[in-house]
Amino acid sequence: MKNIAVIGAGTMGNGIAHTFAQFNYNVHLIDISETALNKGIATITKNLDRMVAKEKISETDKTATLNNITPFTSIENGVKDVDLVVEAATENVALKSKIFKQLDDVCNENTILATNTSSISITQIAAVTNRPEKVIGMHFMNPVPIMKLVEIIRGYNTSDAVMETIVNLSKEIKKTPVEVNDYPGFVANRILMPMINESIETLYNGVAGVTEIDTVMKLGMAHPMGPLQLADFIGLDVCLSILNVLYDGFKNPKYAPCPLLVNMVMAGKLGVKSGEGFYDYSENRKAEKVAKMFS
Image (cartoon, rainbow, N blue to C red):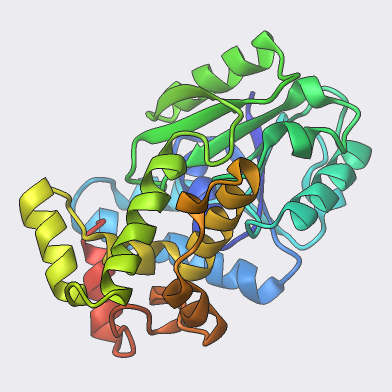
């Protein structure tokens, strides 16, 4: 396995592309938006520059990594002759299903199809293809080049051979794969999102302010980042989407999104990416300060 296609040049997609390219895989970074592709490559370049400045890699390593990435605006052209496709599009089941149906039509029959979904059923996504045994979940953590965990999610029909291949591949890029089964939210978000939601409820009920809630969790529970700041970093729209998947999947009111979260998303306050969430990121230096926490 040497040729990897990554669909989506956003935060997760460019991080996944960066990681594979840094380990000398040939990466096709695909996005229908040329603007998004350019922004994704610029982000990768900036992150590599930061690694060079910290002497974690050399200029030669940086150049080689960038040379390993080829941008495409066409899925059909971008997935030709690849061994693995990792989809990292928006957390929306209809969109992902549409992408996987197209991938099934245009990819080589031996190509493994992986999704970076953080909550949506792998079995449901695989059902739109004629190769459900070759569909698997690879849930990377953000920021991808730094975080070690990859949740490997087995769909109902995922074969043992595909599972073994993806586990071994994850180890080759210096990640720690953890195998989990296909239930809403898997492990990471089934535990994390209710905590974030309860933190928002705590704010909504007036128990304490944003800084106070985050300080309690950082100093009292040794979390590197408070849950409200983490929600901003993930994206409040993403948090809401995952909670809706959990609520729909389990029909349990404990997963119902807090009204404050719903209202903030409707108002366009999505966190770091929109410039405002529970914290204000409107000044560039504030956004950079958050980014440095993960550098």
